[in-house]
Image 1: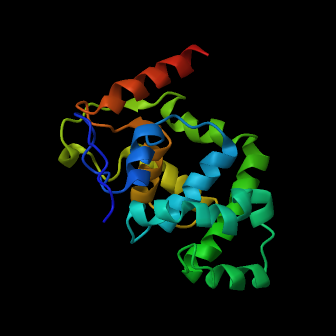
Image 2: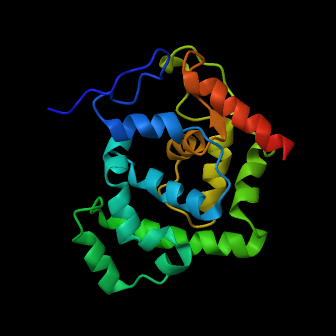
Length: 204
């Protein structure tokens, strides 16, 4: 039986306390402002892979994805051909869904095209929030919306540029993960920590 991870007072309720990987993700990654283009691409692909599944499922397979998708280097993924696709669809380390695998490769091509046009995916993406995370102050998980006008706008732009598995709900989950919004509950110890990270980022 898995060892139960101690739950500190004031953690968001969604990470399963029996999954140490899930708890660590909440405590160290989720909601932290991300500005590295490769990391932003990786998280976009992983959030797309989550469609119809739980984030816990994808998180448990993240290292498998990193191996199978060769470090999520978009230049490499954009060159994946039929032989590589066949290998991916036989790889138990990832979700073996043909549409999602095809979308990941297509999204790598779209990502590179967007970068060629605007120079920086990070700058383009964060421009939707004027470069600063939205600081929400939810007291209950029931208050957290599935989408917002900003996620709708980003989704529309991405889809117009050829990205797939980037609907508004997926995009909002992505925004939460990369710290474009601080959706830790105010009772969670990470809310104040992520807010402080955002303030330090604005001072740089």
